[in-house]
Amino acid sequence: MKLNIKVKMNSAKKIIKDHGLDKDGKVTKFLRDDVYRLYEPYIPKENGDLYRNVTYPNNHSIKHIMPYSHYMYKGKTAIGASRPKGVKRKISNKPLQYQGAPKRGAEWDKRMMNDRRKEICKDVENFIEKGGK
Image (cartoon, rainbow, N blue to C red; front, side):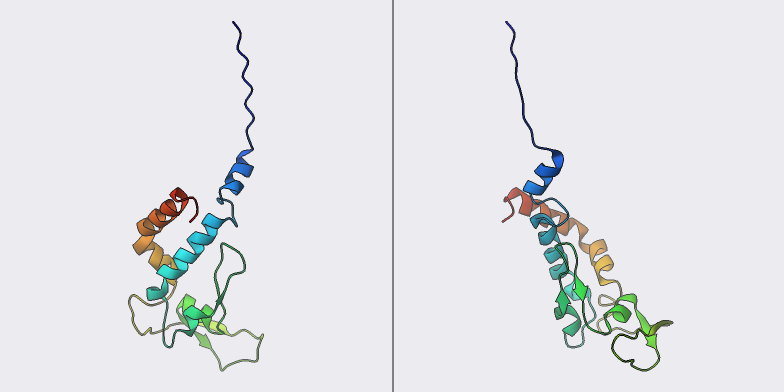
């Protein structure tokens, strides 16, 4: 007896996209939002504007939009007086002093990931196991 079985399968790319695992999929968006939530205690905070004023250019990016965001992230003071909009100041080698340091400070996303990587992985795993809910 001869048995012929034909299996049709979607491409790996389509399977990844259908499950929200692509670059801009729902799992990536969940990861972005989870990272944003968890790095709040690490971001410099005077009045909270730096943390609250963000945009999401896509499902895998967070952009802080305060004029001083870049300097705060790099942890270095800017050289010179304030400039007109659109003109960038240079970064000095002088480190910034952060209120709430050492937890709050420069490169908050990287420092948070060092501390909470396993928690984030577990959050994403749970999100996927629950079907993206």
